[in-house]
Length: 208
Image (cartoon, rainbow, N blue to C red; front, side, top):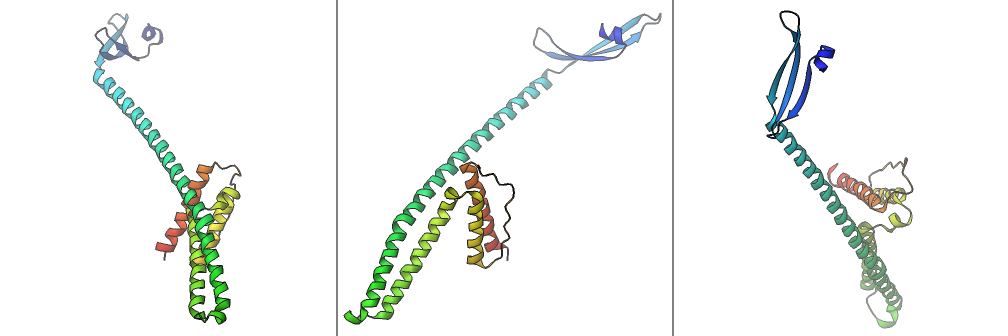
């Protein structure tokens, strides 16, 4: 009826009782006496429809797999950071404190060497090595999980990392903060901090 009313070709789909799908094409034309007629042709597109449905199913499965991967990656990152934080706290609160205490004892012994006849040079070397080791442990703790990230947020944590990089590697860093929200979710802040940290590390190793 639409073809007769509009005089325009029409295209539509029809599914037969057999379950097969056809694309129907209707074209208007006129009989020899001018009577309007419609030429109708049907093209079996069942396989095409099945392929489309299979593709949609595959795409949905792929999206679900990607979402599961993102969730697993997020859980893995959270677990890794929790372990890093625990190790960093143990290094900072336990090991570095004990090393600092040993360095203080070595300094005390160094001052008392005239009384006991010990070698002052060896005591000084031992004290210096203990101090250096304590600094290294503190730096390792900071690399594992910077407490400044928890205390002051992403912007200050990255600024501190840039300052440490400049001091350690002697490479100038221009750091500019712009439009960083003060309410960045912790897992996002950790990701961004690690990206910046790895970028600086790659500069030191590979950029020449």
